[in-house]
Length: 67
Image 1 (cartoon, rainbow, N blue to C red):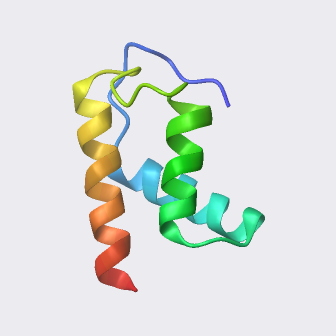
Image 2: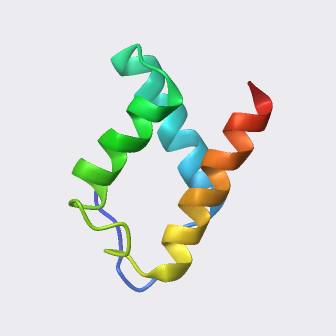
Image 3: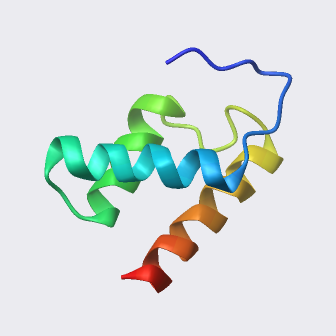
């Protein structure tokens, strides 16, 4: 997935992305979170900036509440 470093990724983007990981890997949210950090963020949660990391965390909290 190609991502522009200049833009802030929104929580909705990460909610969709994490949901896709959970469906395709048949795993729970924690598994999807680890996968995203390892692969998408290249092991560095701030890889795309603090705002995108915060959006990622917001999406995780939102998905936790929805379950």
